[in-house]
Image 1 (cartoon, rainbow, N blue to C red):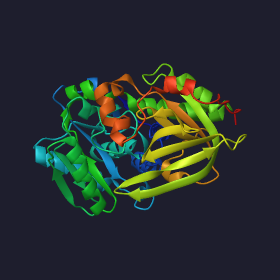
Image 2 (cartoon, rainbow, N blue to C red; image 1 turned 120 degrees about the vertical axis):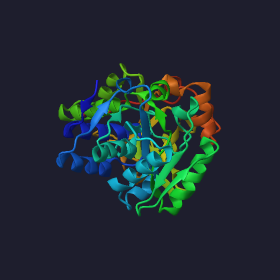
Image 3 (cartoon, rainbow, N blue to C red; image 1 turned 90 degrees about the vertical axis):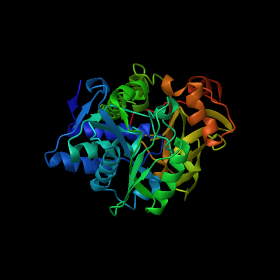
Length: 377
């Protein structure tokens, strides 16, 4: 059943969403502050399940598009996403009954909450990625036949536009070009659909999952327990089910650049006890593949997370710096994201990776020496 979002739950949700962002999606800290401002002003945000909406209720997913590195310097505000939604409503000739995240990971978990606070619309507890991905066609919605367009796009300066593309890949290409021209970030609403379609195509209850992850890490810190053990235990009764520590070490090298609207690069970590034991993570906004001593130990769409080794706090790709002590933690993706059609869209082939997809449950157990969990902080 639906519930009102509290300030405490918002903070847990933001941290959990940063974990699900797998290094990308943008740091939700600024977005959390924007939503907190709305709650302090007395506005309410209601989280609902898709089952609570009538079958024909119009749901407009929304997000902030662009390279996460841009969000640090070009802070978003609420008016842009409201403008994007109103533009799509006008184009469709219908008013939205609810909004929802396009992706539950990182900053984009906050954008629907901001829109809900500004407009009074409920926010559906689901999304189309179950994590964060860098491109708009990389959605369970798209895999299961939902067209992404018509979509709307808005700038910080009041510009709005409608993209009605022939397919979802071309929609991404056109929207990416407009986002670059809008200064590297833009507000979007896409994949307009009814609630019945949401129930069929979305990854369910991901906002609740993010809140549970954040609460688990917070409580582990407060109780001086190992945050990684606590997270692994918590995941067992979710549709994600499996979490594992892959590596611990310090950042030895980072190559990061903003290209074509993406933060692209790689980070190399060395083990504290053995500098010859290394892990390299390749990212395009989000972490795509983790290789230990050259062998893959986790690969997209499974989640590869970089977490502070003492606290378990997530560290995003734009915040990676030399010398950081990090724990690389992997989470198995839900089954809806492991079908052949899904893997063709947002598995290794979708990113030009040579390795085939192998579930992290198998990869983590077969490659490299075991990783010892750290002592509780």
